[in-house]
Image 1: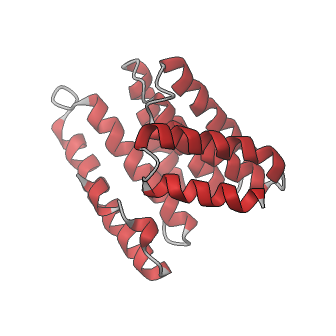
Image 2: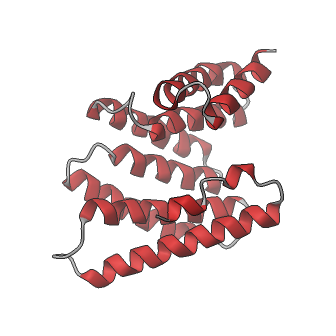
Image 3: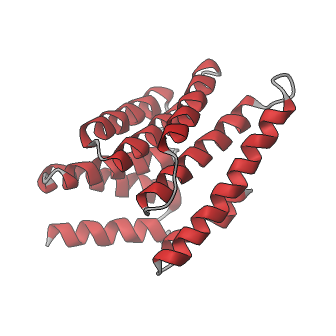
Length: 191
């Protein structure tokens, strides 16, 4: 699975290496989406197709954030397609699609729209009963924290970072790398 190619991206130090890593993963997901599209609707697993669309859209947004050629218009279309598929399937991962749309709007610099989408993602996870099981719900809380911090509302952002930290720790355990990172960020803000 192409996720293995980006699992360690946040540990990479240089901008060039990180960009190459993200481009490699993006190419893998783009190929995956193209293969699904070649299968035709009757042979396509809709959940897997939606996951591939979301992964490609998320990587396009991340590449754009790093100043590379991430096509955010295509990313939005892919995330919206995935959201429609997941809604039709009444799937508990619909919140993931909404969160990716939030990432795209965040990358575009529309902080209020991004915040609205991250909050909608959290509601979707809550409504599906997956809030305590989905790593992406924890990330959506972190995303709200980032938006509020970027809006200059650091004190308002703290409860969101605390919740993100609690959720990640619940899901991954206290020794997971991102749990440790979240704790470091939290400690830094509380000083």
